Image (cartoon, rainbow, N blue to C red; front, side):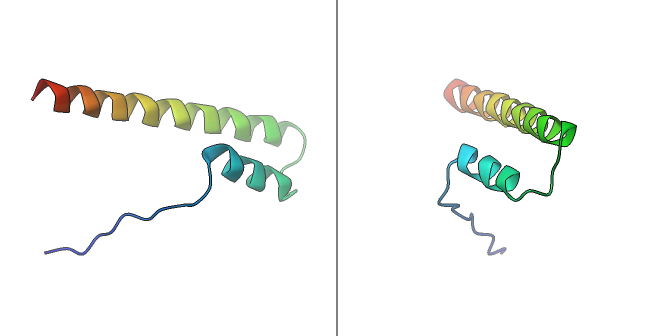
Length: 59
């Protein structure tokens, strides 16, 4: 039996994104590309979990 545990990150998603941006390693257009990537990733997980929730409700 596997002992995989979920980890809790005590920050909001926007806090983590802002911390990454404040690091200063991204410049110019890379900042915008990173923000767009975060938006796409957020949308992906939103719809994935929504699909899972709907499947649970159906069962």
